[in-house]
Amino acid sequence: MSKIYIPTTSPDQWKQLLADPEKHWQKGYSARTLAKCWQSAEGFPEEIRATLSTFSCFDKIEMLLALPEHKVSLPGGSSPSQNDIWVLARAGDDLVSIAVEGKVSESFGPTIKKWRTDSSPGKDERLKYLCDKLGLEQPLPDKLRYQLLHRTASAIIEAERFNASHAVMLVHSFSQSDECFQDYKDFVALFGKKASVDQFVSVGTRGNVSLHFAWVRGEVSFLEQ
Image (cartoon, rainbow, N blue to C red):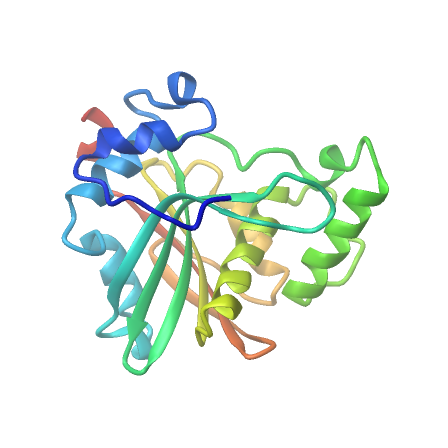
């Protein structure tokens, strides 16, 4: 994949990066809503900054760059983890890798049980890699959402690639009823922590990288733009 990126000047330029632009670029859906919100912000959207800054190390966090629809390669097949946004930030002397997953009412995709229906050596290799990267034991719960697994791994992978000290998997949800939050909560519970809306959660280190989670409720006005 190309390593050359072109800066955007409007949220509409994010559309061309989607896997299915016509299907996914609709008012009230996560791709368009996320683009409108982040493109209009000077750095992090305010609600994102507010939640991140509750962690003392991130009280003056600064966005260095943000890449929409950033793909992170994974072993065991050709499909990468496609982050809605990947952010490289600075917090003091440390770099921070942030994998952002945008949501409105969309699910986190198939469960582990469904994803493994058509088992293959490639899927076995990928699942082992993801579990090793996250420090999770197999077998994983059947109801666990596969997307949460590889999105979190992508934050760590990019942290290692850029020598960042921190990796964050952040869900930016514009659902005012917090649809699918239970799936996220169940996932964070695998790391021995309890998740809440607009809360930053740290779960220890994976290798040399400190791993964190956050679910942040977005500004509802962007759903109508």
